[in-house]
Image (tube, rainbow, N blue to C red; front, side, top):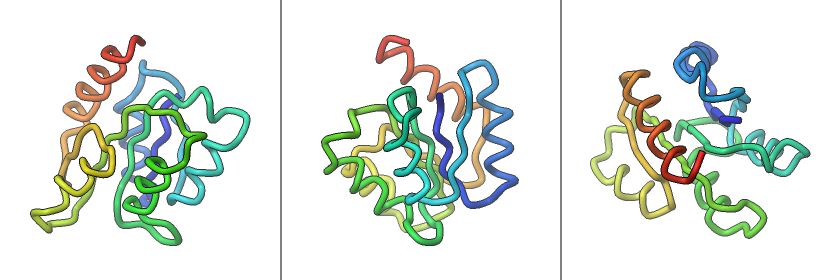
Length: 124
């Protein structure tokens, strides 16, 4: 399972299509929904997370902080996709445990290739 955390339905749909063949895509509209998925019965089957940063209720930065500090969420690849133009953002998200950062607009094919490489590196 791939957890896609994105408040834009169109972008979530684009990523779902792009990730075809990598497993089931589970959508979440913000960080709180993502944490509910991860805490639920299918949470252990989530192999990777792809998240936006700017979302309502709980943004991607808060989600990354929770993933880093909550022991219940075992390490898994996290890819961040964001339209944030602050040049410090890529380093900040890597410092919070993200495996990769893609600025918007992004290439769905490049994100899929990176996700495949990360999944292969962790053994599956």
